[in-house]
Each structure stands twice: as structure tokens, then as C-alpha cells.
Length: 278
Image (cartoon, rainbow, N blue to C red):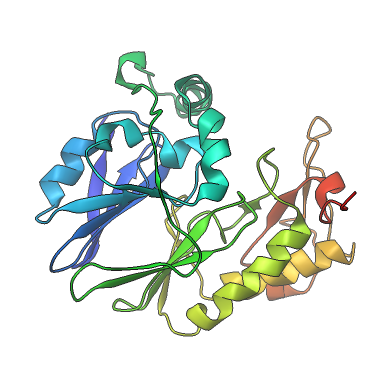
């Protein structure tokens, strides 16, 4: 099995496909930027070094193991991450967690899991990034938008020169709020509107799972569903009796307006609203 593959998205963007998730390498006239490092399974560094023709840095969109697991290969680079996800990284992206999740995925796919290809942990520092930060790669620009929900510090990425918005896991189908690290539906609903000014200026939305794209109405659809959950008028489906989380839209028998067809939200019933301040 070819563990890592890559394909051209635009002349400035290359998608690197790893098990279950993809990363993106972006390069301008002066510098490059790697968005996420996958699980830390296999030699991503070799692939990026083959692609790059300029010095590059590494930016983690968030700290989940499938996005931040391979940082150890890039310790000679500047590593950027939102400090709101630092605590999450310290346990979520450790080798024991990566192995548990990735091995289950391999088994479901009928693949052989090679433990020797799973990289060791990173215990170093990160350079902070925050909402509104930007990078000039040399005639190519990268702007960051914090869209807290899936994790406290998850970033979407706006690429104005290619008219692309990379929503990643921040605004995806489904948006997973059924992780212990996720925020409430109410907090997601407060942050999704930050994407409206950007979605109006792009032709393409890129994600990091599935077929790696989303329709242009993904923001409006996700916002609609979040509002339905807050009003307790969503489908609130429990897919399996053993699940402790709900699904906002039933795929076949939904009573909701088709507005939200492009998205879905998984959420905990006891984490719909923000925690009350004591």
C-alpha cells in the first residue's frame, strides 16, 4: 500500500494524502507552508522536501492526532499552533492515542498496521498563531480565521490569491463536536459567522477528509443546523443506543429545511449551551 500520495490542487497548493486525512503544502515565491502533519505514520518529511523549492514552516490547524501527529519530523522548522490547543496536543497527539485510533482505522479498511512506521512524540515548543494572523509567502498570502468549536483553537485558512477557503475540520460535513475536546454548539454558532465574509470571496472550499472539498453553502448550512440545535428543533437523532452523542440531521427522514443538507453536526446533548459561569 502506498501510504502517502500527493496531487496538485493549484500551482501553489499540493494536497498530500495520508491515511484518513490530508495535509496541504503551499508555496509562494519566497517561502512555503505545510498545513498539518497527519498521524505521524510514514515519512511525510521526505514527501514535503521533494515538493518544496523554498524554505518552509509548519502550521497545525488544530491539535487532534490525525492533524498534529507528525510534528516530530519537523523540529528544525518553525512550528505554529494556536495556544488554545496546546493542552489538547499534550495528550491527544501522543503516540499511544495515535496508535489506538489509527490502528482501528486500518483494521476497518482491511489494511496491515505497521507499528514501526508510527513516529515518536514531540515535546517541544510552538510559535503562537492567533485569529487574524497572516503570512506573506512571496506574492502569495495566507490568512487565519479562528473558528472555535471542533477544538478550542482550530483555524480555517483563507487563500485570497487562489480564491480558496480551507475550512478543514472547522466547518465540514459533519462538524464533530462529539469529542471531549470540543466546545459547545452555542460556541460554534458564535464563531461560524466569522466565515461569511470569506465564503463570499471564494470559488472553492477545501477540507481534509472525505473527497477534500465542500460546497460553497457549507457555512450557511452549518450555521442553520447550529441554530436548530440551539432552538431544540433539530432532528436530534441517536444513531446507536451505545452513543452518548446526537446527530442534528437525519440523512433520510429529516423534517428540517433543505438549507442544511450540505452539513451535519454531531454533538453532546449536555453540551449544547456554553458552560455557566460560577
